[in-house]
Amino acid sequence: ETGVTQSPTHLIKTRGQQVTLRCSSQSGHNTVSWYQQALGQGPQFIFQYYREEENGRGNFPPRFSGLQFPNYSSELNVNALELDDSALYLCASSPQSRSTYEQYFGPGTRLTVT
Amino acid sequence: DQQVKQNSPSLSVQEGRISILNCDYTNSMFDYFLWYKKYPAEGPTFLISISSIKDKNEDGRFTVFLNKSAKHLSLHIVPSQPGDSAVYFCAASEMTGSARQLTFGSGTQLTVLP
Image (cartoon, rainbow over all chains, first blue to last red; front, side, top):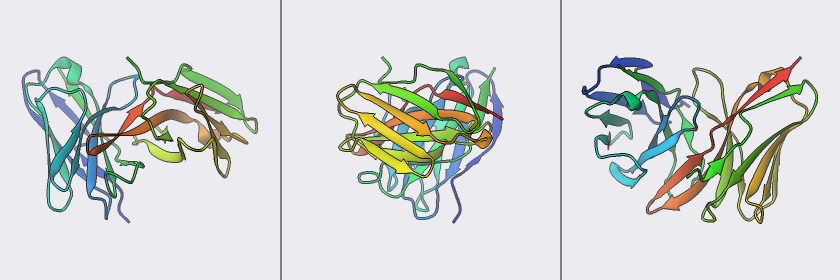
């Protein structure tokens, strides 16, 4: 069984640019969530996708957007990057959004905005 | 406002002794609580969980206790091993709309000394 994978591992961008991060869910999982983990903090919920639709969102502005594809892989897009967007971005998958509370995390993408 | 708090940024324990990690929460809508372990350069790994209707759950060396009236939970590791050295995150789960969301504490760095 393949776990959650994310790409790229590291990324450096300039303020104002746009970035796309990618995630492949664990086999059999149809729900994916994205989290932002700033240095010294716990992960913060950005949004969740279930069957290609966004079904929940945390306290993040609209310049954070996402997609989920029919094979349940997912993308996180961030427009107009700001210095505070520098963080570890984690993707987590789970079998179903309502009844399953356990989420399984990928290794993350470290984004640095200069 | 932090809904999940881990007030101890770090904890050092001798190998073979008990490690106790604590977590407090404020939101009464949380219905499951989870502990994750995180090594550097890896995503959080699920350890153990507990439903809000229970007060104890045990899995091998790991036991989680929930005191719902005090809105407090703790993770006990007995006996502690050097391989347990990692950052431990407490997380609480709730349904927000159609999404099951995790809210994390800021983590506790556990160091088990040989």
